[in-house]
Image (cartoon, rainbow, N blue to C red; front, side, top):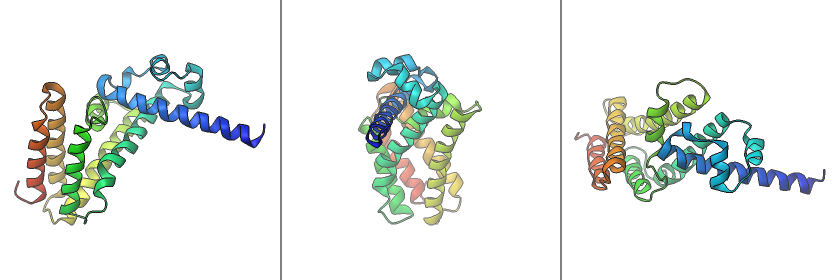
Length: 197
């Protein structure tokens, strides 16, 4: 096989992987990671079942890839825009603004991927549950680190409260369409950041 043919096949495989993982991440926010199937992905993306299985190998691998894709999207939409800000309070305020923007932009059809999948896989074991836990832990660790830099007396407690406000806002927005819940959550979370709440 020529190098050009190998490179072409690799490019097609990468494109299949990206499209399928992104669609799977979208589906996970509205119907759960467990609802993902090869057939439904093929129908929704226009990819072949055999093409999807060739690049992933199993349904579980698709679910893990969906978590990885959601992480990539979350970093791009929420974390990267805040990264140029001064560590500590300024970065935390920027993270909160970016998170609200991520929600308002409808990046995922079912709201925050982290919130949607955390409950679904909270009581399970295995590679998919491990990937979901790592994603949530990474977010909490980032909040704790920035709160520690900001001089928070109890960064773990502060991160818990910020995460609880954002999770509640996501839930209310998805259940009741309450866009104002995002601003309320940001206001409460900022109070934690500023040491007022």
